Image 1 (cartoon, rainbow, N blue to C red):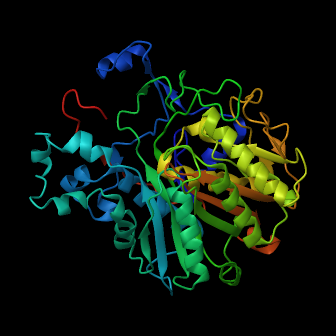
Image 2 (tube, one colour):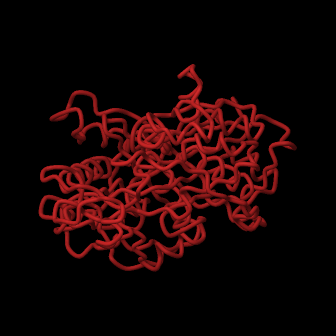
Image 3 (cartoon, helix red, strand yellow):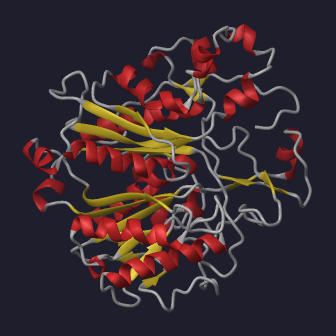
Length: 450
């Protein structure tokens, strides 16, 4: 696995931050806002999950010249580097791999193209945009994220773009796992990247929206007012367990079941989540793994900090777990979005990385900023509890991960401890390669939002 998120350049640092309850969401100063030409008033919330070095990229490593790199979507840059580190952590050299490696990945809207490149006279010195706009869009369209990785790293398995909004990267994990079971490839990279803002300074608050009024994300909490976003990316490398054991790989955890579905029309609106749809994917994943929900000790929830969405999520989880015989108050429910912000298309794979490390290390990180349940989030009548403290987790350990996309596409993945002999196998230091990044960035036009 590998990741690059606010406050953490790699998975090991992210795990330490989660256990320590580090809030990596950056709060900008009035001077920073004024310098950027942003309002310094009560309507602008100066909070964002800042990603260090967003403007930088190791272009030469991936075969790009300076002018090409300056036009490349930062989301593609992040995922190229993350995929490289994930393969390193897996001990896989694509040039020596005896069988196809697939790529399943998604990213968000290309805001860099929209706010930095289009209509910007500064683009010309860096290299004029092609007359053929199809070629220009290939530099940053979401469709080309996995194929760009396949080309750069020499991967010959399926390279499939997955676009389901915030659930994209967890749906990508499900698609990759199914491809492995269907023997379409023998290893697969799955994940995603997101650059929600290139300025990374905050957002304008609008009452009735989903953004937090005070710049603090509080999933399931009584004081929750909404979510905060962040930039970053993450990837995992999957193999069939028998192959991983035979190859002597280090196995962090085993994906035991997964499911993807949609809420359909059984909801109040297109952007409103549905209880029945969410409950169905959780129940399907449990059935696929042949698990009793009572054996699940931790669920990394979607947990965006919107009271309405959190209430629906808990109701759906409760419905699925009760149907499987889970007892009240046994399972810890958490969310890492308060630590890093909501990483949009990359959120699901980051939740998976957190759950995998919890299963692997036997510790459940706290849910940051949680004090008491929101009155609309009925934890008392559910099989779940939210913890503000680190919890030791003796084995056997099983966890679930949820990710829900605007538009209703939901994913749920189940992970369990790896066999003892596989989890004890040697693992390469991660990350190994140190990227030689330099700035490849075109500033937005004056007054342009980014």
